[in-house]
Image 1 (cartoon, helix red, strand yellow):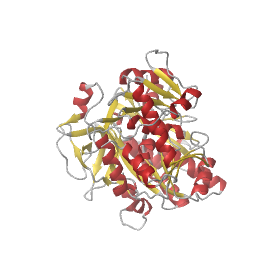
Image 2: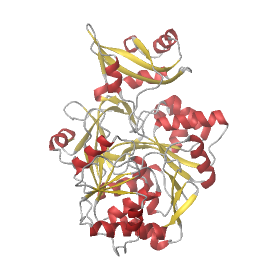
Image 3: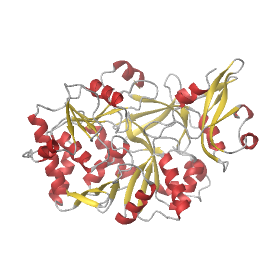
Image 4: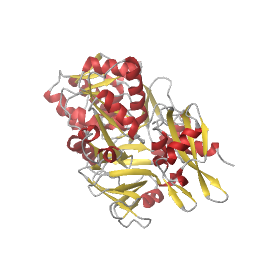
Length: 497
């Protein structure tokens, strides 16, 4: 099923319901949202775009983004969202690799100079002419296995890979959201403070399905005061946020005395959320937080930690559960595997593996990577984790980030969790550095002014001596990619000997 039908149904049921907002200003109801998406589809079809063709979106977060997105689906084409923060050279790689024919861009973001790719700037006079095209009258039929969204991984270790997200995968993700994460109602508001090209954009689906409102901050990005103002104005606001965004929002709200009025749900994912940080966030904002764990290869759909568990302080094991990423979502199975992919018992660390309706079928034009990642129906995530007897999954680290020192394994996140307990540590990231005798030694990058002696004492009070950092490197800020993930590859380059 082509999920553009959800927009058609919401427009049919409530054509005058408010739909799209730029800041506090309404720019479309569901009737006009649907009509403009249909017009984009008609124009694409007139350009020769057919079912399965790729059409890219290289745009900042604006209401036009969603209009174009659903126009692509109405035409039966596949959307290729490109993060607006990418360099034009990086965007050009995605366009070339995906075989994109047409790209919609925000002003100033046109990638490269490939004249074979048609560029449409939105908004512009040509774009406004597209919106006046006589609209298509029906949604182009698509099968569950057909390509809907071609998502390119962040590429921290090389060129990004195109994850083929099918309509069936997106359907599974959306239905699991209602079941396992947070049920959506027509009175809710989706606030897009994180890039629509990523998880925040995927979460538009269930809000369109329910006829909820969609708000793009006027700034086009993440500004703490703007987020809090919009939440207070609209009420019942849902927001997807990277852990670094949650930490920033909490610190700002504490400093300014704001309580987050109007925030209903903040779904956090995309990187490690340290226990101390989420405790602070819940203490300040209350029970509004939900955690999910997913990958592009299983978008937003591996596990979920519901708000009642994130906020619970009464269960005898609440801290361990809060440090987990929750339990398997309804449409998938999760297991821990050894190096051969054979299942390991509860409590034993190994590679996190997942299979089910939300898992991709392949990478785009990359059979070697597909064969390495998908084995016997299981997606090998590359993440190290532990399942407890109750089915709660706790992440240890990326398998490539694990440190082996003197023959013993050190999971960087375990050390980072301890370091962040110091009140003068703002950020921490731990890596392994080559050592002639031990193979690797533990090195900690610290943002903050905590004395090394105090950090040593803190570590020795809570973890084994061999896990204690042997060196501390002070930074003004940790290097991150466009999704807020720490670039440990850059940290490793800093300490090469």
